[in-house]
Image 1 (cartoon, rainbow, N blue to C red):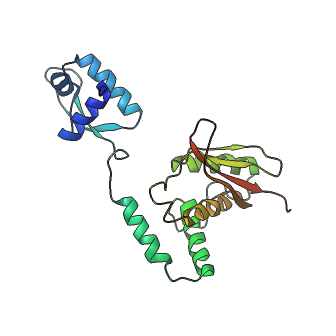
Image 2 (image 1 turned 180 degrees about the vertical axis):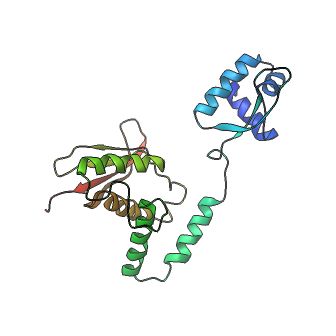
Length: 212
């Protein structure tokens, strides 16, 4: 049996947008209960405020919620896959690597054509490491780092390319090159979508701070 929040998501998907009052009337719950569930769904990134309307009297405007852009299925993954195929097909391996490195450089600069990244490779390594994790998390990698014998380990708890990674494994190389841009050291991938102790897939990259 669907939960109250599943019913709310289904209602919003069907009607595109809804207020707490709409949910209350349609699903037979109090407005306070509807607002509670809507707040939880918004906090978890499943819905977002899409508009508001001035209510009666002097109260706060009525908010309308729609499915978040992260929840809606779109054609971006397919478009990205097609563009990568068009971009890399029939290129010699060396040229493919050059193109992927150029892509990583652009990503490291936030899409800018500037030659500078936040902090820069002249910054102390701990700062570079902290900034790299912060920038990766801005791109939804759920990144963290742990100390290792040879060097730090960068652990990515989420792959933003999940929907196309099986067709484009070269995106793992882009991740490694992106880390090289941030940190200034060679990077080696040591785990790819490996299950954690809790069964959640993760990727791991080693920072090779010493030779050997």
